[in-house]
Amino acid sequence: MKTTLDRRIFIGSLTACLAICAAPAQATDEMNMSSGTAASVPASASQQALSDGVVNAVDPGAATLTIEHGMLANIGMPAMTMTYKVADPAMLLHVKTGDHIKFRVENVQGTLTVVALKHA
Image (cartoon, rainbow, N blue to C red; front, side, top):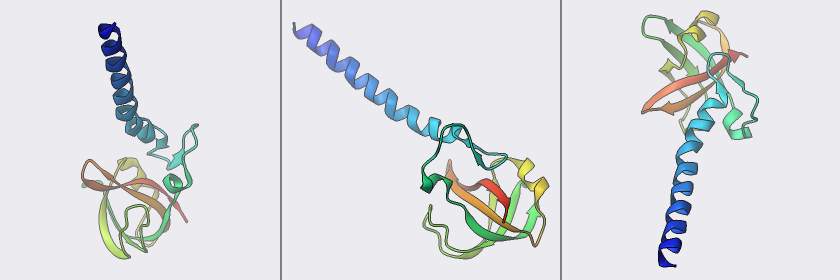
């Protein structure tokens, strides 16, 4: 009987661990990085929130975008001008210096990265 109880505890713990580990991967899959649109699974309002900005520079070689922006509420960043990596270099084909944009920055493996981008 003790072996059966131990096995149930182990299986329950393993199931919980797998569910926790899979959640971040699922959240990443829900965002279409190249178009900035939500995939078929609806994201919460905070995941969809886009910030306003103005493009100051586009660097396709470095896959970066310099943006003058207001507060980025989702990451707690104050208004500033900063250069960000882009999740998909194809995003840079659709913007130029001076464009008003709506975008989302997230911390992707320790690098602040534009993961969604569209014209304002």
